[in-house]
Image (tube, rainbow, N blue to C red; front, side):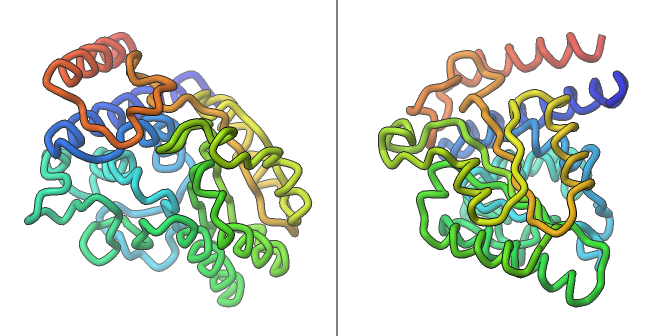
Length: 280
C-alpha cells in the first residue's frame, strides 16, 4: 500500500473514531469499545476494498458487508456517513426514538446497510447466504462480515462456517475482531474460543492472523483473500478494544458505556490532535 493511500485510510479511521465518540456521547448509550477496535477495518473496507456507490446504495453489483456484531453499529454508521451515504451530522441522532440510526443496523431505514443485525450469530449466516446467492447468479460480488470474538461462542456461527466451506464460498471474507473482551470480561475467561485459527482451518477455511489495528497488515490480508480460491477466507484481527482513545483501551467497562462530558472532551481532544497530525 502506498504512503498516500495509507495516510488517507488513517485519516478516515480517525474520523470514524470521532463519529463513534460523538454518536455514543449524544445518545448516552451504545457500544464504543468494540466499535473503536474495528474502526481500522471499517476504514479499509469502505476506503479501499469494497465496490459500492454511496449515491446508489442498492446498486445490484455492489459488494456486501454484514456487521454480524451488530451492537457495534456506531462504527459502521460513522464509516457510511463519512463516505456520503447520509449526513455526518445525523450521527448525533443515534438511538433517539425518532432517528433512523438505531442501536443495531436496520437495512430498511439506513442507506448502505445490507443486513439488519443484532442477534449475535445470525449476521454471518446471512452473509454466507448472500455469498452463495452471488455464486449461483454468477455475480462478481464479494461478501464481507465482521464478527466479535465473544460472538463466535454462538453455535450458529459454526453452522454458518460449515455451510460456507461445504459450498466453497471463496467470495466470502469472515473478519473476526479478536480484542479478547466481551461484556462480562476476557473471552478467554468467559468462554475460551481459542485456538480460533486451528478451528477455522478444521472447518475448511483459509485463515490469516493479523494486527487488526495495523493498516499495512490488513492490506496484506485482503490481498491474500483475493488470491484465494476454493475456500472461504477468514481474517483473525488481533485488536485492542477501545483503540485510539487512551483511557478506553483494553477496558471491559467500555463495552457498552457512553462517554461522560469529561470523557467526551478528553477523547475528542486526543482524536482531534491525531487528525491534525495526519493532515499536517
